Image (cartoon, rainbow, N blue to C red; front, top):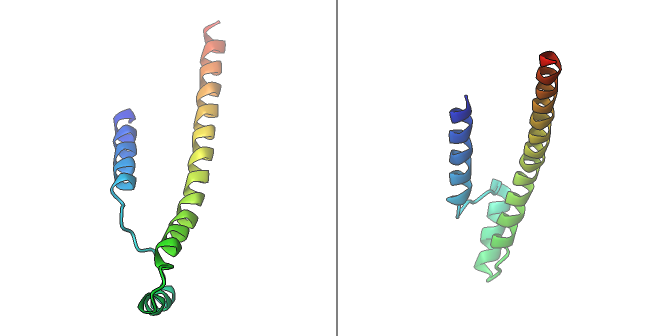
Length: 86
């Protein structure tokens, strides 16, 4: 079980590392950005960054809560096993 979780963490980190050019746009946003690009605007790069930021934030929060819950459960199990030994 421990090896599977380590492999999944490594794969997740690799996916984050190699996700250089991601276009996270809805079709409407893409159409407006293409028309803005024809006029010489450079808004597309900042909009993509904002969309990716909004995408990553909930997953980051969920990960932090998951880690906290995991550590709390681990401490409870450890305290139970210490109490049973005495």
